[in-house]
Structures are given as structure tokens and as C-alpha cells.
Length: 568
Image (cartoon, rainbow, N blue to C red; front, top):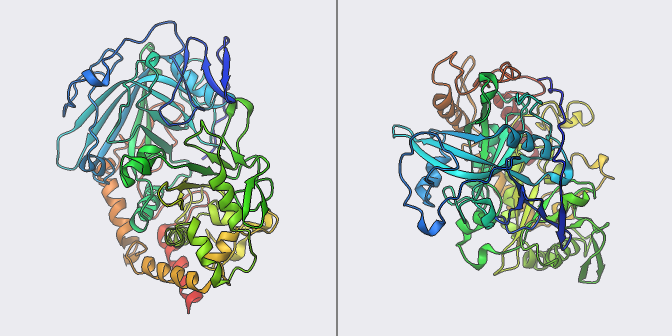
């Protein structure tokens, strides 16, 4: 798909900045801080008008959640919120549940999302909107929820672009984040509001034109099957309704199907570890950023003397969009205290020796790392085959330090590549053709695929655990995890007839297809309604492919063949 040319908009003309510990505290009377993620780096914008949002009741006076909300969701509506129940959470993320999210906001607020999202210093600014969410489980009535005031903003790194022209026409796709709650009373959002226990929700469009529609969702669910901590994901339709626009082409715009992802924040850990001290640990986001790759080298990150390690340089820190500072190891929680000793100790630890097969070093590693979770994570990652992940490109990982043990738990994210989904970038097509196409011929014991682009480095943690020549105990654990996954059914792709396949992936694909595309040729839930975007969508198919994508069947066949050769 040809990328649409961005149109850059003017930013707010009057901005007053104040800082506290180097972070944005407030921006004029129309921009107020968001403190709902336990981080001081996110702020919220109003709709760009002089109107004051209507007050809504505090959480202590809200009526109980109702099963049905009727009419439009506006700032004046009585909130109808989704209770934090395990059943509701599981239903929301089920392949047979239809989800529709409809944002209502002013044109100025929509333009602010577009404008702020393309200016680094304003990346984390939310614009205010009303949000109506319809959740329809299979063979059950639709449950409709209304959040009168939420925050919404653009998200992402390289995917950000202006998506609204000066007339209010949506002319491109962007990834989004919605925040349901805020502790700041001036926003008039519901304090501590949650949606099935989540205070935020991430939304990513089908950027790589995956015809199956589900490879990213399947990857998240596959990680969840084998790991104790990994986010949930599903599909859902996203719409924008501009309340002050009359032109029908501009007023209501359906954006198509998005992947909806459970965000990484305190609520994520509270669901899995209990809503207490165990959910209050330090969370770091690891990216290949302006300060370098997340390769766990000490360069520009750690200074060591024996087993004593301290932070040095700028690779470990707290992101500050205002100053355009984006550290490789970005601390996301407990940001009031600039204590990075846990991450510094972790990086220093894996560099204490270069004897990567030393069984005697296991006790040191296992003091600081949940090794079993890490090895299982890497086994799943091998079969997913994302060239832009932690192992291959030192990118896209969360690390959480569990308070009671101090151990690091690794949690992958940004899974829009893998399982044969490449979009316009497959490094194994040319530069690393020995491993392709689409990572299918890469050995499970190989070092980082893109190491030649990164000084021929390999993360020392991978050398200790999964790369050829690693500690034998860990190699055995890794082989066992690989075999468990290979035999589990998650990788099944049986060609039962020409163009027809069976297996878990196809069961999930057909479940989502029947939810959003039950009748061939009915593109209601697939096709965007903006005149500029109507031709930019793909239908549900396990056989069609575009760009550098390959079919799931071809990917799995090649991957399993390589795996069997490697272990024989």
C-alpha cells in the first residue's frame, strides 16, 4: 500500500511550559497533566476550544454499571463503565466477540491528535473525547458502555504521521492510545475509571496489510499460552465522529479494523500479581532508540567494578519528549525517583564474564532474572520470527522487576511483524537471504540476525541461554521449550484441500472472519468510510498476500523444517 503523504498542521499558538524534575507539568489552560500511568511524562489537551467540559459525577457517586447504554455518548452523559471482572475481560478479548469503539470529539480536538502526534515534544499529549464502546459476545446481546470524557492520542515510533487535513478529512491511518481515567480533577474524567480493569487501551491499524488480519493477535495469544505474563489482544472497529462538522464525508469516519492491545502499566501487573505491592515494581521499555540498541552491552549504560554496577551515560533513563530524550532503557513506572540500580545491575551482571557456558554462573543469573520465563519467551519468539525483536534487532521488549524477588521478567511487545507478516520490510529477502524468506531458515540457536548492522554484537544474555555454546542446562531448557511449542498445536497448518487448511491459527482466523466478515462482499467492518481511505483495506484470507508477506502455511512449513534440521 502506498503511504499517504502527510499534511502537517499548525500547533497550538499559546503554550506555557512548566517543569518538575525535567518533565512537563502543565501546558496552558487548555492542556492539563495526565497522572494515570504512574509516570510524570504524559499530559492531556482539551478539545482546543474555550468551552469548559461538563462536570461528571465522581467515582463515589456513580451509579452501578448498566448492561446497556442508549443514544450518543457525550460529555453530559451518565457514565456506564465496564466492571473489572475476569469474565468480562476474557469475553472482550475473545475472537467471537465483536467490539466497536466510537470516539466523539470536536474537529479541533481531532486535529490536535494529528498535530501533537507528529511533534516530538507533544507526543504524549491527550485530547479529550467521549467514547462509546459496544461489546457483542457470540449469541449474547450487545453491552454498550459510555465514557463521557477520555483522553486519546497517537502512539508509535516510526509510524507517526499527520492524518487529518485542514478541512477535517481523515486521510491516513495512525496507531492510537485511549486513557479512561485521570487523577486530575480539571479534566473532568472519571477518577480511576477502568474498562474491564484496564485504565488504557492501545490500538494499532493493519499497517503491514496482513490478509489474515490476525497474525499480530495470534502472536500475543501464543505468548500468553506459554508465559505467565504477556498482554492480551483482539480485533475491533474504530470510528471518529466530529460533533461540530456537517459534511457527511467528514463528520463520521469509520477507520476499519484495529488490533486492540492490553497496555503495559500497573493495572497489567495488578491483574496477574494482585492489586498490591507486587504490582508496584519498576517497569522499563526497551527500544532501539536514539541512544542505541538494547543489546545489554555496558557501552553508554553501565560502569562496573567487579560485581558493583552503576548507571553511566544516557542509555538508561526516563523519556522526556520535551527535550527529545528517548533512552534505550526507558523507565516507565516509579518515575518520581530516578533510581535505575535494578537495570544497571542487570546489564552489569550479564557482562561480568565472557564464559557463556559456565554452569557456575547460573546462580548469579538466577538471582536477578526469571530464567525459565526468559527461555520460554525466546522459544516462542523463535517460532514467531520477528526480525525486529529483542534477540534479532535489540528492540521491542519490556522488563519488569518483581518487588518480592527483585527478578527481571521479560515481556515482548510490538508484534506487528512475524508469522510471515513483513509488510514492506523483510531483511531476509536480500541482506540476510541465508535466513529467508521471512526468517524461515534461521536456526533456533543462531545469534542476532541483524548483528552485522549493530557492530556484530550479540546480547550476552542470549549467549548464556539460547545461542549455540550457551550454558548446557539452559540449552536443555530451551530445547524442551521449543519442542513443547512445536508439538502444542499452535503451529499446526494442515493442507486438507487446495487452498484450504486446518489448525489453531485457522480456527482463530475463521472465528474473527465470521465476527467481522460473515458475508462475502460485505465490507461493513473492513472498509474505511473516508473518501481518502476507502480503497485501503484487505479482506479476510489465508491465501492472499501482498508486499513482502508470505502465507502462514508457507511460513510454518519452512520454519518447522528448519527447526527439525537444527535439532536432529
